Image 1: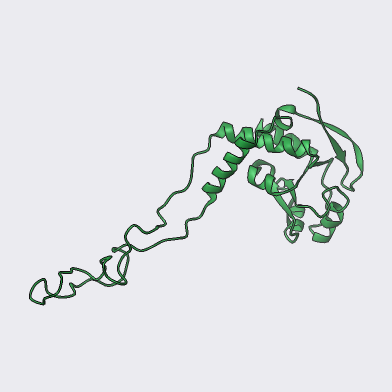
Image 2 (image 1 turned 135 degrees about the vertical axis):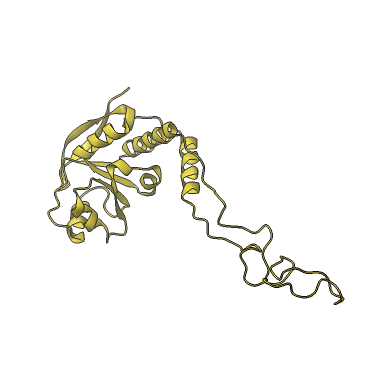
Length: 211
């Protein structure tokens, strides 16, 4: 495999060198059909079932037979909960018991993740810094930093770890900036954001976690 290199910046936005990346993680051939299929599967798994109609066992009333079985001249009925009645239960309506989830192969999921990471590198959408240096969790401070990078004004996903609370807190008020733990990287969030922002330490952790 050919060497995969990416520019290395300091936290002030200055280019300070080049970093070599693992081609098994960042130099994988992208297969759009596989990516599309997995995105569709993850969206199905995240789907929340909202539509729900009540069957005859769920609607109110109907505890008493509406009239005698015989002698009234009317049709026989046992309960006003019957689907035949207005306000009765619904037959074959949508219910919250529906399950749209699909099973996703773990190896395939991991493979497609390497594809979207590789695509970020190939399109110069992965920004690598030597370290994070944000002493206070202020939105203005983080914005001033990000404005010095090529991702300025673009949707950016910052990879973090638990100890980087300042980054997470500062990004909460920014409409186009989000954060994600290095061990929670997923295809949908990476594709949803134009740029992926990460430091060297976390890049190594991603390599260890997903290799």
